[in-house]
Structures are given as structure tokens and as C-alpha cells.
Length: 218
Image (cartoon, rainbow, N blue to C red; front, side, top):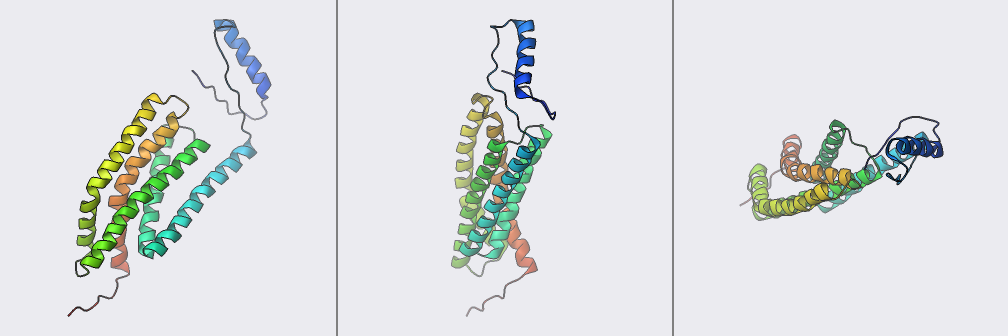
């Protein structure tokens, strides 16, 4: 299977179909090929799709920030959002380096990555908050390190089994979902380490800038 993509304005899809059919028939014979689909996306439609895709990711990030701030604290929400932005940018960079097309299914993959990454981050954040309540005298870096170690086995098992499924889709899924699986493959790997090495250290950075008053214990 081959996909022919043309970037040119003012083309008629019907004429393109006929020209390609004539060229292929001349080279391979009329009954030796099949044109399955011909699509055209105009500049206005493409611009609208790009705008809606970016807005959908932006809205998802904003609502997650609101939820995490309400569920935990503002610093937790900031750390999670920084990690999410990192995940999306790295995955987008992988698409740019490999010269892959950004389409609506890829935008859906980005939203899937955001949801997967935030879930892993919240698991670690919840353990950090729990350990802070149990041992409030411990320094924050020690509490974060302990919490990450306690959830590390869960993170490795979850990410590992997810990667096995995505890798199977990437290898055997075919061209239709190849780019979608590629986005998820990059996003799951990036989202896993960003929850540990980006979202959690932001809490320490925030604590250094805006230190809380320590409670006195008798």
C-alpha cells in the first residue's frame, strides 16, 4: 500500500483520481491496482482542525490543573502541568524529527498521553501526601524519594504491560494506526519518567521558592 500526498492549492480531487488511475494503468495494467481513497483538506479546514486540536489539549490541561489544585495543592497542580507540557512537547518533537503527519487521530493520541501521564503522577502525589501526614517532620526531598520508591514497582508494571500492548499495535497494527501507536509509544515512556523526574522535583523547587511555616512539635 502506498499513500500519495500532494501539497498544492486549487486541485480537483476527481481530476487527481483520473490522472493517477491513467498513470498506474499505463504502467501496471487496469486490473492490477486499486485506489481506495482520495481526500482533500483545504487550508481553512486544516487551520480549523489545528485550532480545535490545540484548544482541546489546552482545555484538558486547564481542567486538570483545577482538579489537582482542588484535590491536593497548587504546587502539585503546577508540577503535574509542567510534566504534561513536557510529555506533549517531547512527543511532538519526535513527530517532527521523524517527519510524521499531525492529524486528528494523533491529537487523540496526545490527549491519551495526557490522561495516562496524569494518572501516574497522581498516584505518586497521593503517596507523597500520605507520607507527609504520617511523618511531617521528615524533609520534603526524603518524603518524595520514599514515595517514589514505594510506587516504583507499580509504575514499572503498569508502564511495562502498557508498552507491550502498544508495541504490538505499532508492529502488527498496520498503516492505519501506525502513527497513533508511535505517539503512544513515545508518550508512555516519556510520561512515566516525567512523573518521577519532573512532576515530583517541582515540589522541591516550589518549596525552596515559597517555603511554608514549619509547625512546632512538642
